[in-house]
Amino acid sequence: MYRPPILQMEDIWYPILAVIGVPANLLTIIILSRGNCGLSKCIGAYMMIMAVSDLSVIIINVVLSEILIGRLPGTFLHHKNFLIAIVYLMGVSLKLSQWYTVAFTVDRYVAMCCQKFKTKYCRVKTVRILAALILIMISLENIPYLFVFQPLRIIGNISWGVEFRLEAFNSPAFVAFTRLKSFPDLFCVFGSIFLFNGLTVRHILVSSKSRRGFRSQRSERRRDTEMESRRKSTILLFSVSCSFLLLWLPATVTHFIAGHTMHSNRDYSSPAHIPALTGALLAHLSSCTNTYIYAVTQTKFREELKVLLMSPWTLILALTKKSSHSNESYLS
Image (cartoon, rainbow, N blue to C red; front, side, top):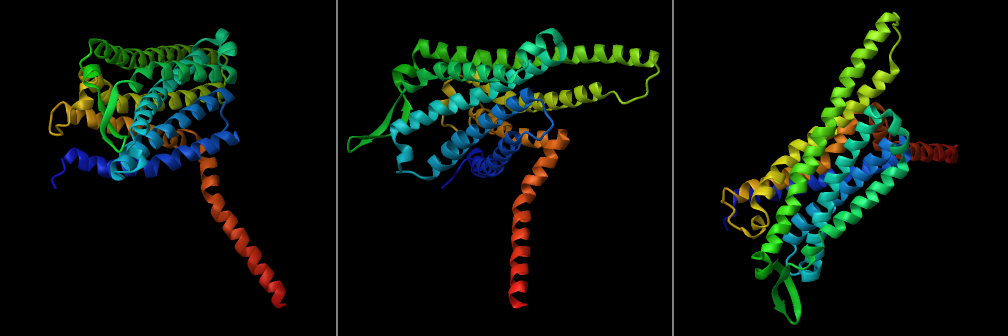
């Protein structure tokens, strides 16, 4: 049976993402929860909520939606109510991944550029409040998706599968709703990241120039620990932001152009549908990259990762030595 190339790519791509993404985000959550990465509590809190949201994307959008549902027909996974819940959670998890990245970008801007406001804003309490508010707003925003689907077929009074309701699909209100949802993605999310990163770069360049001039006047040759800390924080910020922008931009642009019609288009050779699916592949990849960015840019995170990865082998080696020592004692 012929299978379009884009679907063959998905058959390979999504299992790889699951194998990479689930362990990577779990390791990140464990490492950050131990609090030994040398990061401020505020940065650690943002990294934690970003890792949790990325893990939810991998589990819901990749493992459940793209792998299990497609490979287990006739199971409870294809029940109408379950599928509608999955579609709803898919939208929520993806939005959370986007807006938590925006919140992290804003926090780093405040921390580096707004010293007077920093002590009030850059706190773990603020992170928790913002995370809760973003979760509530996105959960409410996606509620209409719970009412635009109908069962694909009914067998024995049980509804299986879902498809767009025709009246919802052609409704001007739903079309407007879809467009309005796409607008914040393309302009607010990306615009905010570009804006605050640009302001942060400008502030860093100006302050670094002033600081170098001040230190040269005092003829100081000691290491500037403040500038080194700022440099590491900047590298982390720009690495996360650039990765997010590059991987999310194709999906956001295609969704803004095509809107909800791309969900009903099943022509896998269509010039409009292939970019949408390819953009989705890259967007889901974005939920796997942060762990590797942390490992590359943060020395203490890398050390904690090595310790965590080696701990099972260390335990096995210790148990082996203890067992061999006990045997020797018994024989003697």
